[in-house]
Length: 323
Picture 1: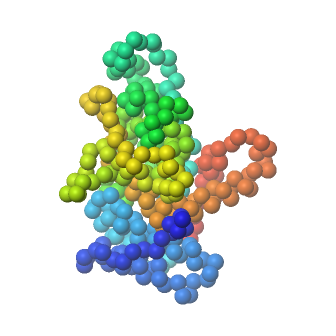
Picture 2: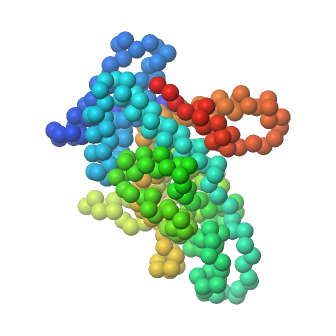
């Protein structure tokens, strides 16, 4: 699909002001390729489109204004290039590298046998050990032990947004600027285990979600009001990734107070990041980086089933983008 390698920026739709001027600069940055060597053309287009689509896809006006301000503060094309590559490194490349450290498995503690769902729920809420594993168990119960996208019982995983740590401080700082939302406060300490930070997905869909290749788009009515917890699934390649997914996904819970649904704020931010990666071509670019690492390391693996994203995380200083 065309967008996998980047889609040209649409015309400027913003009224006069900082956002308009910043987006206009992105359009000019994208078009100013006459003196760019052919070998650097894709890089220039990727950088310009990344900044432009970050303006268009920012989930809040505050985030859009922040990105616009940073673009306008750039003195020339080199600084614009540096800004784009900073976001590629701190959000999109780190998002993929961080996948290796996200726990996506079934609960590991032993659950007693019960005769009915009410007894299971009571145990999960009152007696189960308070831990990441118990939160996963609650999520599985809430979601009926099925993937929320395709309804399968088997091979389900529980995905959790990575916790805030010093190691990924720059990643979350960049996401907060883009999102205009101080989400790191939600991810400190025990709050990372909050149930509204957990989603049940079949293993393949789990990987696609982590890799920013599928995302949840909120459903709006004719009056543009959002239907709570109703989503369409966006995809970088809908013909192969969404063939088994329903057109509309309704997230439900048997107990909205004790078993809250995934937080729409988190899904909204994830979707915005995923759309920017897809439309700008950065997602395809990172796929190519990781595929190159896998090819170079393949002779040394000698048949071992190694996760290339784990290796990319360990070698992140070697694969960061440089202007």
